[in-house]
Image (cartoon, rainbow, N blue to C red):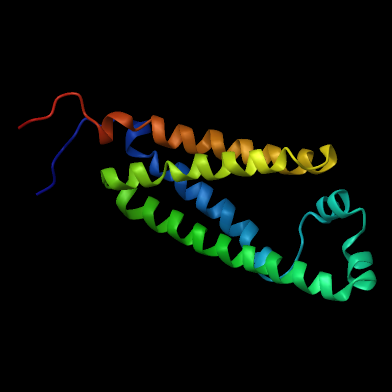
Length: 156
């Protein structure tokens, strides 16, 4: 038997916000995992060399960079997988643990913003806009369905 509730549209479909974030992370993770740098100007702004110059001038360092770069991509794949699965099932069903768990997302990306502030300004311009978008989206996805997870009138 299905229980009918008076959920508002934005409460009922807030899980889609996290699904979108998961798909965005997945879209960035795939080339990252394959070693394809989608923002080579970031490497140049930080190191002062292009990726090819870095590869030629110090192959051992480039191998280390590539190892961590691709490993970061694998981490992003796992992160995206959990975002998508939790949003499709637990968050969509209104399980409170998922709401608490998803607070990790804005905290995680705010930490990336803090780390990015130590980079040269040219690097910040390519990193900060997508990070800010994800932070705003995740906070929206958490706050819109607040009453779904914490109803005013609890029936005892």
